[in-house]
Length: 218
Ligand code: C5P
Image (cartoon, rainbow, N blue to C red):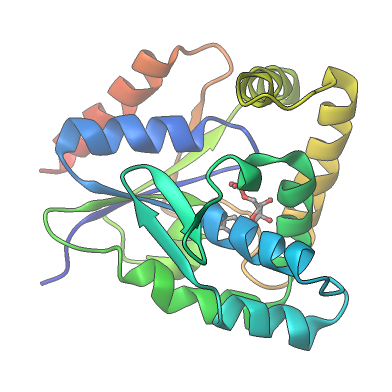
């Protein structure tokens, strides 16, 4: 029998990471930040000067990714890149490499190994549609673009990056448009997903909403 998965998908900075983390903590489950794998692929390309338009080279970088997740930190080639992968330039490049089908194929198994007892909370764009289509609970987490830009701005500043609200809003809309319109695993709610709008919800309220939905299933 497969371990249960709570899939949390949605646009950029809708709070998926935070909510996934808190829900996983509450249930004692593992968490998968699938976006980190696309960000790592992007960073690998940046560091080795791979042209993002060279799809074969980008796919190769994804296949050869030497990444490790440990204690909330992310390592590449043994180096702690937890903060580096959060840079906006990396996020935007991640969205470009994520449109390459071979990249998505290369990262599939790396995501599925996270599914282990007692359960997994997985956050991304295609958790409920492609990676874990049999997840018993699928959440599509949305928030209006102003709320999301404000959250991302705060997050970036906390990590020591500079951030400008207007630019962020623009980047965010461009990134979401690209994620929604790509042919491979586009950002879309699964048919059986439940949408939660967190624009006016606190973190605790959103976490409680997800836990409430889960408790009704078990
Ligand atoms: O969630 P995060 O902002 O870290 O994701 C970075 C980029 O990686 C997204 O804009 C998206 O293009 C891509 N991504 C994806 N599928 C996922 C997770 C992230 O295509 N499951």
